[in-house]
Length: 200
Image (tube, rainbow, N blue to C red):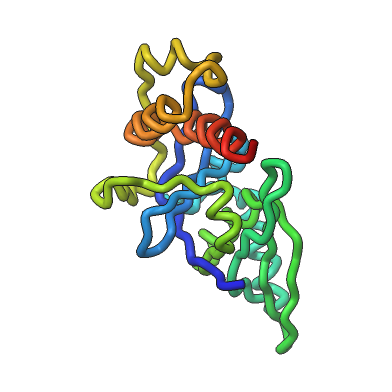
């Protein structure tokens, strides 16, 4: 399968779900986005590396990088390799002494290490097709690499618990509105509802 390169384009927190964050990966030279829900600690670990902040003591991912460097282990790439029941699975592709090793990893940890090592992030077409979101507007591509505070309209608040009552056209329109506001957590719920309708 052909690998598709991704880049981190945003970290977003959800107004509708407390303590939930999404890291948004964008297709390099493409319009598709892959939002992945992560916890607050993982979001912080990614944000610290993106902002090139130096904590007074190493965070867990900094420790892991120091450990790998001490034993001459290179991280070449991160591959988001599978998606099962809404959970993403990833692999770290490493080498040591001319031997290539694949190590299973949580996707949030893999992304935190990818930022620290400056290595590429990849996924496969089938994962982007099932979990990705297509931006209609090419000008909509944003690469802020900073946490974003999304807003939520009254229409979204009313529809929050009522996605099942909406038809596919209404869901598609709502998805575009939510994407414009960069509430990727909400977009995931809408996307999943649209996909469940299509699979029936």
